Length: 71
Image (tube, rainbow, N blue to C red; front, top):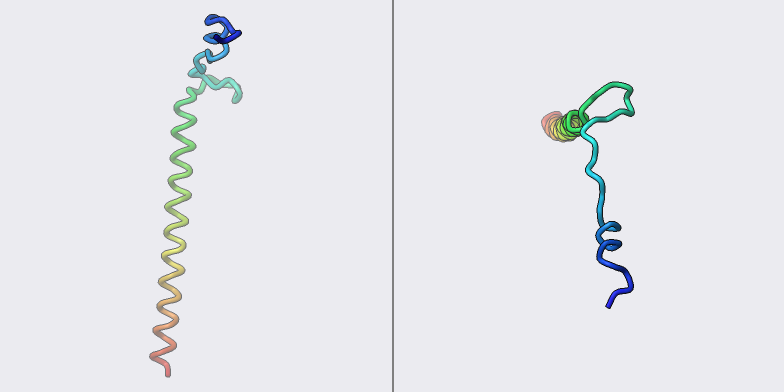
């Protein structure tokens, strides 16, 4: 048997529900909107990174092709 009573165990596992508002910014902004905005920013950053890598790959292939043509 556990030394802790059921009420204490339940109270230790209980987390209060998170507030839907983010008061840190000084205005009433819903936390879900902040999360969506942050996720959209990460999505745009990932898309730009993929485009940059693709463009770099295309430049390397073009430079290699031009070097073989110039020979």
